[in-house]
Length: 444
Ligand code: NDP
Ligand code: 2IT
Image (cartoon, rainbow, N blue to C red; front, side, top):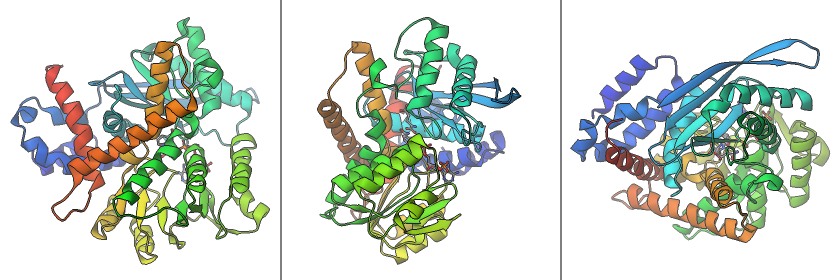
């Protein structure tokens, strides 16, 4: 495989998909060397078979708003690869959703899921529907309409969706209810369900908690204690909230949060009580993060991102490409020691280059945020067993999985000078598992 040929092929086949190109190029750069050490991979043309998703479902979603107007949105489910298990990945409802974004997320998910040790393939779905300002009934009708478009293509042994941006426990509940009615069966076809109907304990917390567990493993490699470390967190949704919760529990000090309108910086630290306010604000009242600054009298920057504030650690937990080159330079100038990604692909390639040049601890999302899908995998296991585990059991497994992912990154990503290149490590470890499974299953 020639790296330049793959990039050429990508640009030719998928010319209008910048996010997809970005995600693929990163993986190709990491795996070229090992790929070429296995001539059987090229013979089976594994790379093209990984660049073209297995299947993409595209459909129109029609729903009626509270004023009686008929609305339409685009609906998608990208089933990227099922070499190691049923398709698995979240659903995103956001006005920015495009095929390029869902393809990049499904591609990343394939390698992330391979890292978890659990049998899950990679997928992602969603819609350009914006939940912002919609009533509870509109959300429910929209969720039901999305499922109408996709229900025949998902299922416990086929493809198991979950949450992502704009889709949390409420939306999964509505989608599962509609799925159950259409399919006429009660199976684990979604994860992130309510605890009362098969949802795993700790699934809501898993991505944020898992990211902090991964961060602790990274810090351990340099004998750094997390206690008292000031942490920049972006986003204020599911991942950001539980990242803060675990940081506080570990004695670290989260000092920022954001949403698509701006960020807050609280130099005194976001405490448990303040976090409770954020959870109610975001999960119940669906308000804006600006209201935190109004409540607690701290700084709010409209339209900004928190990366220019001084801190020790950054945990981007909002969205893709939310941290660019100049943000990375600002972080370096302020002496950041670690960046651990809760979001998927939040750092641009130029930002990553800066982190690695400065040899700081840097974990890409597909390693650091794999805790969410891992507990989704554990939810699938519990659903198959028709049993539920305790919080201790799930947490112990989550910790083990995150430390195992870290170990694999060290194994495949340690460079000659001892620097751990987590991007390379995660990409090679994830790719090798999927590649071996594909080889054993023949040319299909
Ligand atoms: P939520 O919808 O709960 O929260 C998303 C947060 O990010 C909100 O604060 C939102 O602000 C902000 N945000 C979304 N889009 C943008 C944007 N274009 N610009 C600026 N801010 C934005 O989603 P999650 O917390 O679940 O997801 C956050 C990230 O974590 C995503 O990248 C997701 O793919 C990733 N992830 C999620 C997992 C999960 O289990 N949920 C698992 C692994 C990764 P606003 O309210 O203004 O829209
Ligand atoms: O990006 C992700 O890993 C998720 N949104 C979670 C997917 C899942 O199936 O739990």
